[in-house]
Figure 1 (cartoon, helix red, strand yellow):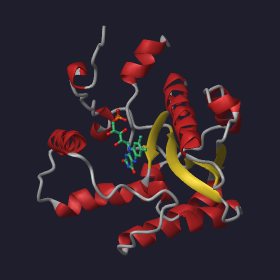
Figure 2 (figure 1 turned 180 degrees about the horizontal axis):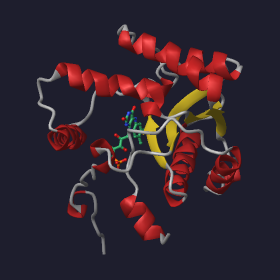
Figure 3 (figure 1 turned 90 degrees about the vertical axis):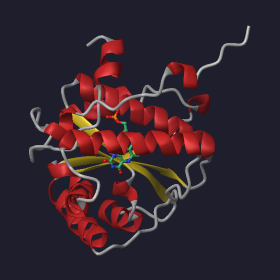
Figure 4 (figure 1 turned 120 degrees about the vertical axis):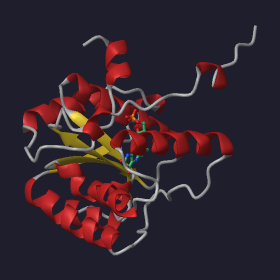
Length: 220
Ligand SMILES: Cc1cc2nc3c(=O)[nH]c(=O)nc-3n(C[C@H](O)[C@H](O)[C@H](O)COP(=O)(O)O)c2cc1C
């Protein structure tokens, strides 16, 4: 696939078949993604892939916590405030999504169901978790972001669906338990990955972007 086409056509998928992704494909995906740039080629990212019984364990625990209203304790705290510009983008994205799906603003139950689906890997068997050591700083977070973007694009190129999910790292102690990791390893993001349902409406949302004039200035 041509790169610009891959960037323009990738989108987050939120309805998957419960089919495992072959291990060699996942290894290829991560190997490719590891060619991301990083500060002095420090390569701060680490990856835990959850499949099979591990996925069942994680889903079971985090779904229950979310359903019962636990806010969790993410290693990288979730934002509590957004400036006006970003707040507007977030509002419009949510509005577009629910209008597209025919869900009304006050349909709390349906919205909650979609939100809780996050914790079941949106029906997929597999999720990728990106973490890094606590001694690393902001610049390494930026490096990991580039690594994650490579995963999303390479997955799309391989015909796989993916959704980056902060919600998957809301309860990091469960992840450290599942992956047998110490407290010094901090979870940045989960990425549900797998074979997505192509016809599902939620997988056919194309989110808008603000006009380039709003983010770009030339200084000559
Ligand atoms: C850091 C980060 C965290 C995200 N967390 C979630 C999440 O928890 N649940 C979810 O459904 N989508 C999540 N997303 C996906 C965004 O909602 C999505 O990327 C955005 O709306 C743009 O849509 P697109 O990916 O289809 O272009 C996250 C994306 C990023 C980059």
